[in-house]
Structures are given as C-alpha cells and as structure tokens.
Amino acid sequence: MLDKTGIAKRIAQELQDGWYVNLGIGIPTLIANYVPEGIEVEFQSENGILGMGPFPYDGEEDADMINAGKQTVTLQPGATLFDSATSFAMIRGQHIQLTVLGAMEVSENGDIANWKIPGKMVKGMGGAMDLVASAENIIVAMMHTNKRGKSKLLKNCTLPLTGVRCVKRIVTNMAVLDVTPEGFKLIERAPGVSVADIQNATEGKLIVEGEVPEMVL
Image 1 (tube, rainbow, N blue to C red):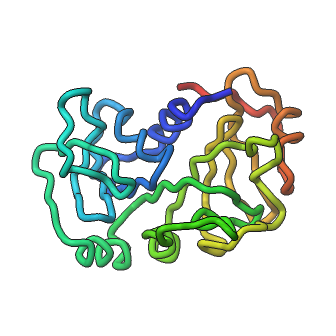
Image 2 (tube, one colour; image 1 turned 135 degrees about the horizontal axis):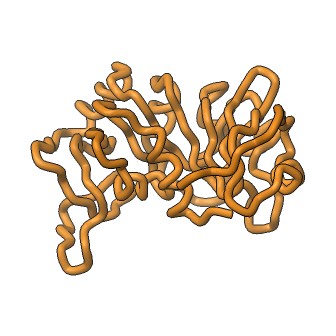
C-alpha cells in the first residue's frame, strides 16, 4: 500500500514533456519533487506562479514564495509571477494540459467533492471549481478510504459537489483507476494490495478485466 509520497510518485509518471500542470493542495503538491528525468514540465499555481519548483530545503525557505496552499516553494529558471486574474485566465482558457486535485469523495461517474464539509468552517472554495470546469484532463490523488475505513470512491457523492463528470483517473494508496461510463475500471494495484482488497474498499462499481498489474514506482 502506498503512502502520500508513493501516490505522488505514481502520478508523476503521467507527466509528459512540455505540459503545463496545475497542482492542487495536499498530496498533489508533492508531485513537483518527482518529475521523471528527461522531461520538462511547467507547474502552475493559481495564486500566480508559472514555473513552480519543488519544496525548498530546510533553511532555504522564502516566506514570500508560496503556492496556493500557502506552502513555501521554489522557482525554476525562467519562472514568472503574475496576478491571480492572469492565472485564472490561463485556467479558464484551457491552457493547462493536466490538473491534479485532492478529493474527499469521487463518484463512479466522475463527480468530485473536495471543497466543503457541511457544518465546518471553510475559507472559500479556492480555484477548484474553475479547474474542474475548464480542465480536460483531471487526475485525483486521494486515500481510498477515510479514517473510519469507509470508501471514498462512491456510487454517488454525499458531500457538496465541486464538479460533475469531470474526473478521468484516480490514484489512491491502493490502486490506479479510470472513470468509465460503466464505473471505476481497475488499472493497477499498489504493491502488496490484492484485487479483493480494492473491491472491499470501493463502494462504487468496480470493473476488473483480466490480470491487474502491480504498480512500478
């Protein structure tokens, strides 16, 4: 089974040379640390960064250089800084090839809930609704179950939706799954995780075809 770093490493394998990529708050921010050798990717942060790099080493942080989650980050050579209006023009104009978001729930038809738990204080919805409305390629990075062991991959989301029928692929601590018209299609298993384990942890419809390979990280 993967930890958060393992999820980020697996999603990093999805990156392609020359892509512009937006990383959401949480697990997705770790992806910038694991870009495969031989490719160049421009990471965009909706608070106004293009060319965001990995997290800084201890003692090298710049408190003014933060991502959308208010974590200190570094800049790659040639990076640019701009206002959030320009940033969201990039997003709404569909100039981002991949968006990676965390989620509290994903439904079998690709709905995502990741911005609010009713009754709990939130600072705002952030940029997630713009991202899911504009992006054509959305990968979700999440834990397969919640702290109580209940599935987060559901037949229908129970929390307020961020977007409808927008998620393409999900990478959890247990599996890689694609969202299809028939349900969650199992693509890969995490090391040490069986198909039966994934079936037991998935409330929504799970499609298993043939031998499911184990992830290679």
